[in-house]
Amino acid sequence: MKNAVFYFLLFSSLAVASFDIKAATFPASYQATYTVSRGGKAMAEQTTTFKSVSPNQYTLTDVTKGTHGLASFTGFERTETTHFQFEHNQTIAVEHNMQQKVAFKSKSYQFKALATENTISGQGKQAFTLETTIKPISSHMLPLWLSIQACDDTKQLTNHINVPVLKSKRIKIYEFSIIDESPQLYRVDRIYPTDTQRSSQIWLDKNKQCLPIKTQHREPEEPVIETNLSTHKLIKL
Image (cartoon, rainbow, N blue to C red):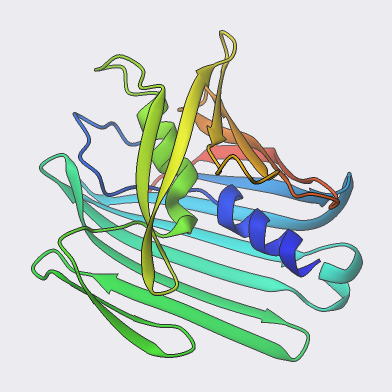
């Protein structure tokens, strides 16, 4: 159950990036809900809210609550919020905060990558500081960034992309391939090392601002973790 929740949260929550983008177009502000299942059985619901606060500033929030089985019994709840600033075709500032509670345990994680500094400061189990010119995203932000790349009409579809992600105290490069699967859908596959049997996929709806509508994650000898879009609506600020 622990690994299942971790990989769902790693890949399925909506998000953005930090490598250069050419004329990126962000979606209109919206709210979406997702059903999260494990082995075909519902276990949680995720509500995602994306807001364009100003022409260059955005906020993304995910709230995930256990609704069935062990996730419900233990009172699983996780809230993630990312504020980011986008200028000159790149993400120049990111502030991320995560709070999670389950049963009698809780944990938190946050970091700041400011536009005016080449230092990332954060707090997990311990405080940390990184000196770097890269403004990485949180794993929370991945699918939105992937959707922006896949649905950028100003350039030819890029079949392979790398994304810098801050995990714990380290910046890691995640690799993805984008497949034009049908007239309605793009599918994005994470590229894992050849010696692993993991797989992670996300489907983007071309007719809904490239909104992520489904994700799947597979681990050896573990039930498949899947999310499916339940509702979606545009919101006015």
